[in-house]
Image (cartoon, rainbow, N blue to C red; front, side):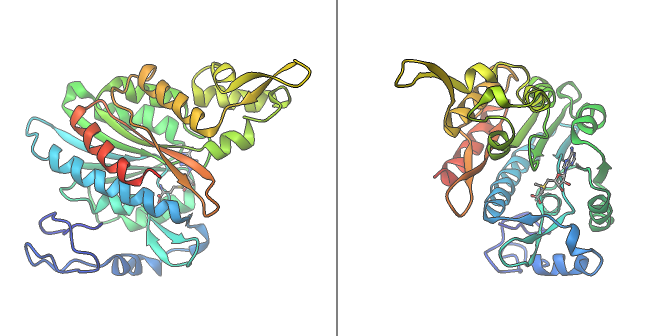
Amino acid sequence: MSFCAGCGEPLDVDVATCRLCGEINPTTEQVVAADADQIDPSILDKLGEWSHVKHEIIEKYAHAYMTVMAKQKFLRRVVYIDGFAGAGVATDRDTGALTLGSAMLAVQIQPPFDELHFVEADPAKVAALRQNTRDDLRVRVHEGDANLVLTNTILPRCRYEEYARALCLLDPYGLSVDWSVLNEIGHMRSVEIFFNFMVVSANRNVLWKRPDRVPPKRLALMHRVWGDGSWQEILYQRQEDLLGLTGPRKVPNEQVAEAYRQRLRDVAGFTYVPEPVPMKNTRGATVYYMFFASPDRVGASIGEAIFKAYRQ
Ligand SMILES: C[S@@+](CC[C@H](N)C(=O)[O-])C[C@H]1O[C@@H](n2cnc3c(N)ncnc32)[C@H](O)[C@@H]1O
């Protein structure tokens, strides 16, 4: 879905002229083409089918969120955070076509965010993102590790007591989001998140059939992502084999997601954490679970309504 830059109304599919105010908006192809000649395509993220679903969900929610927030006149600022922002443009894995990434989509949301903070660790993508957003004074691009930049620089701009609110996307490739960051955000009560829990990375790197063979470094990684060692009990169940011997067996992905949902609610303190959307590859295997977590009842009901349409 795209929105009119003039009045913020949703545009009809594939129609650039706004029905409401008549503004002629640039198409996605035009926005992408304007930047394409400046960027080395080899640095761009390759988006799978699920990424388009992810973008659709975020755009729909961000538009609804800003429609509500724009009416809250007591607020000093409404902030958008993309912790794993990419270059702003990406390529479609199947067609090779250039497409807008999550950061450039956020820039276009109407009503507009007051500030947008994009964090990216890869210097080449940082340069491309800076180039893509150079004319927008609301945007700040941070180079570095999202865990550190959020805690040290961005989250202090989003404090409830300072009448600030924020929507934050955490979209890593793997197990890169520290639990301490999610825990901090949950307790702030001013920030809503979309967070992609990479269950495929957890399975590949840590949640092995033989947990006794997992190297200490990987155990430590999972402790950091989960927040403590409780996952070793929660994500494995004792079972008896034919000889009556017991051995741990990893629980199914759905149970991993449910346990993580409970942690976001009961430990990190997000009041509302609806069931996540499983993002699947073409073979039907879940790559990651897209979580939404919110301190706010209105936000939660909008988020749940959007999620409901995408859960398979
Ligand atoms: C899945 S891609 C992001 C895609 C983007 N959100 C989109 O939808 O268009 C993850 C990005 O995170 C970056 N990255 C990896 N580790 C990071 C870290 N610790 N902090 C910030 N960015 C990181 C990668 O370079 C990559 O561009």
